[in-house]
Image 1: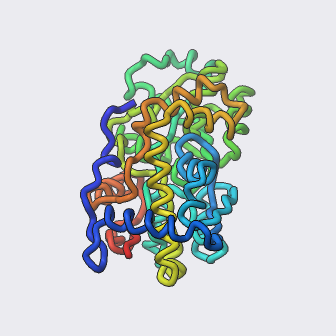
Image 2: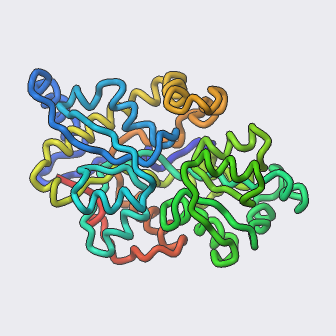
Length: 342
């Protein structure tokens, strides 16, 4: 896994009124203590999975960080970005965990979504079924370019067509000179269904999020083509990918609640990096069918997770570069349009 993560380099961001993000966090900490005996503010957060890369909201909930900051969070499972984005836009949820590119695409169409915090970097793991890889002479040790080229003409299953994982796949293909049209995609959910399809030979390649690629390899179903989460694709290292977003219209009248959610996520980040083994244990508890050893390897050194809720201008530029590389139309979206500020 890559040792450096730009998501960890967060320069102080001044918000309206001259306060830095760190000062806002301190204010939120004090406000959270003052609200300890007050009724909790209910919010609904759409989440797409309990996978490793989306552990921060789960940590904030299970460790009581949301409650400490006066938030009663209800984590509602939805089937991918294709559901979470419309749910956020419609106001049926106040917050949503989603991949950054669909959020930017929605903003380009006038959706008024604002990113509150990064949650993790690129989580995809591309795996080809074992028999096909053997037929093509591909092993995990083959050069990355050869493995990516081997995808041409083979159907890849992603969680949802139009979601962030499809954009990741397209970015990898384009960066290796391959037109996305040369690699057909189909939607398949949940991730466990992708593993079953790969095992049965119903699909040639799967491109799930961590740790399902590692799980497929561990079970002997396939060969790792590209472990993006592990930093194998240089172009996709470190940039915020999974994010927490808010409905801007709602946030405009609920700024203290948004600040409190940010503060709870900040505590979750601090906890994660200080308790990697416990984090892997939580991942295993949420997904007991994934062996503990696989979850531990997926959490790794924690390099895939941010250490702060701020998204810098530099990180936003990297997010936009990825969106352009993947073919998404987001060039008109500015930092101010995409990132929430108080």
